[in-house]
Image (tube, rainbow, N blue to C red; front, side, top):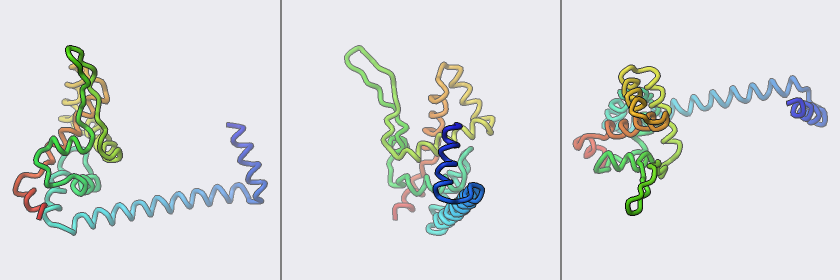
Length: 179
């Protein structure tokens, strides 16, 4: 740590810039980036909601799932294809399906395929863990899986699979979204 600090001071000295001024500029830039990010997220959410009334209905239904924010609901409904025939295809797209290697009588451990976008899996995982912390019914499900001997990641990853299945549009909504 002291080596990094001395290196920082040396570089600042070479540039002829006041260290305090550089730090303040860095903090100001970080604040501007944060504000820009918030504006982009708000604009994205508004754009997703205004484009299609049927999609807005689906976003509201997905947002009712514990742990899913309006921004995440908008992203999920935008990314996940409404033409999908089953919830299993959504689960496979997100990469939350389990693949088990087996040969003859030997059967290996199941692992996530991780085929889909990693950012989508991360958001689903974070939503599930947030729901497990804040919603008693989700926590009961998590605790039941843990009691059966599941590991933490296995128990938390099970909830996003359920989210995908419960968020699958009904046939009437799916038909309206595919027009």
